[in-house]
Image 1 (tube, rainbow, N blue to C red):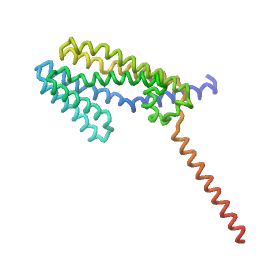
Image 2 (image 1 turned 90 degrees about the horizontal axis):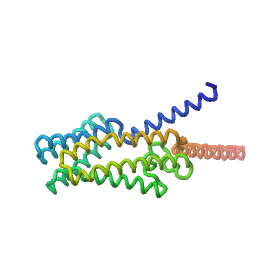
Image 3 (image 1 turned 30 degrees about the vertical axis):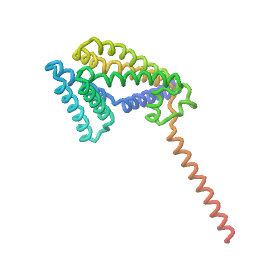
Image 4 (image 1 turned 135 degrees about the vertical axis):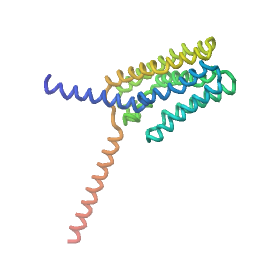
Length: 248
């Protein structure tokens, strides 16, 4: 290995590490995945045992709130836990209103379908959703749209991956909603929570790891501000020097 190759490999390693960290931050990591699975797992487990919609719904809601409390106690970010609570609340309300236990899952299924379409539509429009999500995390905001075409292409590929994976998931779940019973639908939903998500995250990592590095627009703004302050200081110094010469 030559001295010229080493920095290149180090840069690639750093880029991949940054990408991994950003994906974990954006999607919640292992803990975030667990928090999305546990409430639904409680619901389907209890419903499978006693076929009682009310107790199943209460259990799912309680465990969702407990997950938020745990994060609050540990002073961790609660955005992923809160999103889980909102999803459970919508499911509980919908199921209670219709009296059909399967409707506990319907809001989440509709959300998944809407998200799949959002990934596809935004990509076709030239503003892939995954770029809008990860841009602030990478401190590049929307600079990838006009200043980093290679990165925009990677975001487009990743958004296509997310959209198609979620659509495939919907193609499995919606037929089950119509002809499977609540327990069957629930267990399939639990089984499909993490694997498609992991596949989409892995493909996103693959595409972004090979893409050009993000443009840190925050660092650019800080540099511009520092340069502006230096210019102001230089002007002030020249003015002060001029006054001193005139006075002397």
